[in-house]
Every structure is written in structure tokens, then in C-alpha cells.
Amino acid sequence: MTTVSQYPLSRAERAASQLFLLALFAVAFSTALTNVFVGLAYLSFLLALASSAPLRALLRQPRTLLPGLLALLLLALYLLAVSWTVAPRADVLTALKKYSRLLILPMVIVLAWRDERLPRRALTYCLAGLGVLLASIYLTSVGLMPSSSLGWWRVSADTRDAFVFRNHISIGILLGFASSAALLIASHARRTSSRVLALAAAVLAALPIMFLSQGRTGFVVLLVGLITVFLLRVRLTPLRVVVALAALTLAALAVYATSANVKSRTDDMINEIAHDKVQSPNGLRVSFIAVGLRAFAAHPLIGVGTGGFAEVYAPTAKRNWPAGSELALARHQPHSEFMLVAVQLGALGLLVYFAMLTSLARAAAAARRTFAGDILIVLLAIYIFTSAFNSLLWDTTEAHWFLLLAGCLYVGARRQAQGALAAASSA
Image 1 (cartoon, rainbow, N blue to C red):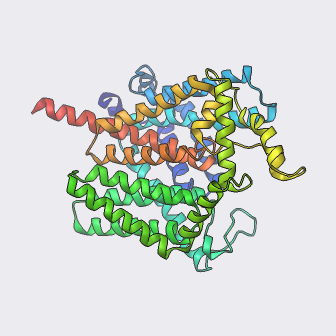
Image 2 (cartoon, helix red, strand yellow; image 1 turned 120 degrees about the vertical axis):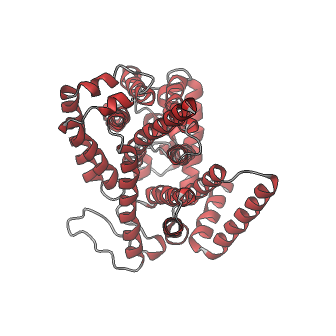
């Protein structure tokens, strides 16, 4: 890969890389800008393929591009599954539009192999965009965030649930990652000043999740991220594990006692599930899982086809909600990426989907104890755990955030692992 990256970048390659970086910056606060930058990046990438022989040479190295190739295979399955889908045409087109974003992963991986700076720049652009989101949330919480006269963004009027640009679920996921990434940066920093600044950023990103937002997903993401950083950066001994568990328990109890949002949202979740309130948010999730499992059991190998979950769930929605209700007629998705893949593509789709994630994880594991490997592990831990109860590839913000960042960090981790092997062999 080093020989390929030694060739100078063409203008089209530089343009595609920069446009993907701008998309990663904008993903935290603007869907429109993200879509524009990604669309232009697609066009630039096609021009780069035509003008850059080193870029085309990378396409002949499948092991290097494995996660991207598996993403293309998953997209191909969605295209093929149109032939047996139970979904109406509108649902099929919606699903294909959403899953077409899988094209991002192979493109970004190829460009990152060509441009050695891209992985680190990708994280910088991502965190800078998250900084814009974080500052806007703090402004919203004190009533200083301006609204858009053209309706380009919404500003929360409720200071107990301060959101802007994104809903509180997306905000929780993005800021949970930002806080975890900042903590990881602090653990790798060599200078005290850098460590202090990174720790301050981690705290600033975590506070809105716990005290300014009602998104339960953010609580979980923050917990998963912090535990992952701890496991990565602390040498485990029985005493340290006991102390960490005790500290985590005390911290959780303190947040529960001091944050009205955490307490109320946690109590609501327990109450909704315990009393089987089918019209509550968590009651809906339970019914999604029940219907999804039955659909998967009925079509275990190849599923019901692309976009098929809404059609499978429609009878349950009509039964659980009054006639004429908006939710009785809504085209639902199960708020679980695993369930969504299983229902649409069956075991075959799950196999390819998890193979794609595993290929990313193997690169992270090979670069263990380097920053590039550790940050990819943090990203994957948050994405995989959160995908159990959110459809991240289905959602515009989360899909762009994960695919753009994962592709760049994958190459960064692979480069770190290759550098370590080269150093060990020459020693």
C-alpha cells in the first residue's frame, strides 16, 4: 500500500477526499449539506477512477478493500431481494435509497489508501462538526440559539430536552462518541496540557447527554464508550475491575439521583416494558421484536425482501392503534439494524452484514494499543451495541457518520498494524 500512496494524488482524488471530509464535518448538523457533499464526492470519485491509475490498481487488491467489498455485496443482496420482496414499490425505493449509502465505504477506503492523511483528518473533521453541534446545544439550553427563518433547523423550546439540528437520539449517539473519543485522546496524549484539554472536552460532551437531553440511547452510548475506553487503556487486575465496577455503580447512582432526565426516562422505560404498554415507545420496540422474530422464523434463509418490514408489521400496527390513527397507517421500521437485516435478507443477509463488521474489527484488533486501532474499536463498540435497538444504516445521519468514519479509521488501523509488523521484522 505504501507504494500506491507514493504516487501523487490527482485533482479528482483530492476533490473526492475533501468532499467526503466536508460531509463528515456537516453530518452532525446538516442533512442537506451532507447529501450535497456526498453527491459531489461520488462524481469526483468517478472522475478519479478515470484519471488515476494507482487508484484503479487498488481495486485489484480485494483483501485490502475487504470491508468495502462486503458492503457492496450487502447492497447487491438488497438489489437482488427486490425480486422476492413483499413490500410495495414505494417502500422498496425508500429502502434502496437508504442502503445505497453503502457505496460510501469502499470509496472512502480506496481514497484513504491513496491519501495517508485522510484517516486522521477524518477524525478531526468529525470532531469539529460535533463541536458545532455541542456548542449549539449549550446555546439552546440557555435560550440563545437562533432559529432558522427558512425552517432549515429546529431549536427545542424545552430546556429539559435541548436539541437542535438533530433529534435527541442522534445527538446522544454522536455526543456519546465524541465524549468517548476525547477520553481516548486524553489517554494517548503525551503532554499534560493536551490531556487536560481532551478531558475537558470529554466532560463537556457528556454533560448534555446526562442533564440536557431525554434520549435514553445517549445514556447507553456514553456508558458503552466509557467502558470500552477503560478496557482498552487500563491493564486489568482483579482489584482494578472491582474498583472500576464500584466507581461505575456509584457514578450511575449519582447521575440517576441528580439528573431529572435520566431518572424520568429510566423509570418510564421500566414502567412501559413491565406493564406491556404497546402504544408507548418501548412497547412499540417490544412489538417490533416480536413481529420481526416471527417473520424471521417464517423466512429464515433469505427474508421477506427489501423494504419488507413495514408490510410485515402493518397488521400489528392496525391492531394496536385506533382506526385512522397516524401510527396505525405508518410504514414502521423496527429500530434495530440487526432485526431489520434479518427480516429483509434472512440469515444470508446477517452473514454478510456481520462479516463486514468483523472485517473492520479484525483491522482494529491487529492495531491494538495504537490510537488508530483503539478509536476504531470505540467506534465499532458504540455502533454495534447501539444497532441492537436503533436502525443506524437506515437513518441518514448515523449511516453517513459511521460509513465515512469507519472507512477512514479502518485504513488508519491497517497502516498502523503494517508499520508495527515492519518495525518488528527489521528489529
